[in-house]
Image (cartoon, rainbow, N blue to C red; front, side):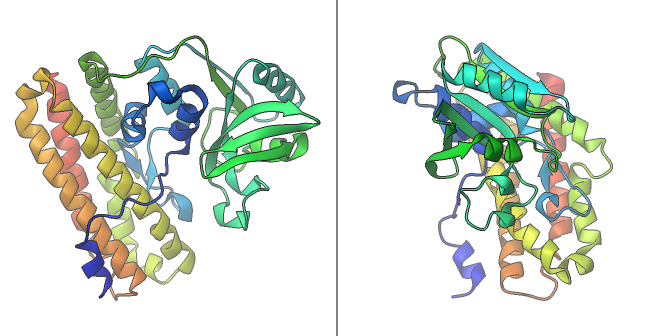
Amino acid sequence: MNSWDIIKAPLYRGKMTCCHSQALLTAFFNKKETFDLWMFESLTTVPFGIKHVPGDPNRLLDCHFDPDLGLDRVLEILEIPYEVKFWIKDTEGFEALKLLKNWCSESPVVLGPLNMNCLPYFFHGEVFYNMDHYIIALGFERGKFQICDPEGVMVAFLSEDDLLNAWHGDQIPEGRGKFIMRRVLGKVNTFNGHQEILIRTLQLAIKNLVDVRQKKYGGEKALQVLADRAFIIETDISLKHGLTFVIPTRIQRCIIIQEFVKKILEYPFAQAYTQYLAKILLLLDRQVQTYSQILANIIDRVPGALSQLPSVAILEGMLTDLFVDIGEKL
């Protein structure tokens, strides 16, 4: 069986790559308020819109909308009161630690973005160099913070120095400053798929797609620039390895968008856009399958493994056009 045969099997969805949403849900939503992770992630609007960051293997294809801002967005869409605090880049961490201890005495606190490779409980943390990450601080006792990490570390204990080292986040581009922390204030409302919430999310998602299209390496141009540099990427081990991370992440985000569109189709307002939404679902299917074939070709070391990137770029442009058409009619 070769890699392409595997692709024809039920789609492997892999490990979730939205640690920001996982952290917020873990910290503030109890079992009685179970929230579908993929729907929650769609409400952040992070999956909508891609960009290319030249020279960064971990961001050859990246989200346009910063997950840090995405957490604010989902809380505002759901009308959940929250508090977020951050400091400017050249600030030391003493004040942040003091406030964190205070907040931890009252509730869990979501921290991030942090520099993932600086978290000492990850084996071979260098693999995660320069990657943004989110964790939960549960309390402070005997000189250490008790941490829960949505990447599968149920409990860890970090000294102040170890936490600050990762929390600085100086080497990562995401986030609005240093030592970012947030907490939910008051009761968390359970999401029941209210039509107004979906419409508002759709409007903001379309704005992401419109905004990123104006960037030099945004939208379909992000994929086209990879296609134009295919030979360079295929002869660079670091860049090829980067694609084996960013392509599965992009596939997941395409599937999250699909699930969001399917949810919209359950509501009466979607009847005016059924034709557009049905085409979007089909194009996302094609995009997922094409991404999967590219990934399989990279793994199998097939010559010209990236030859289908122009096709994915075209699909990205078509998807954006359809969403923009819907936006003009909303």
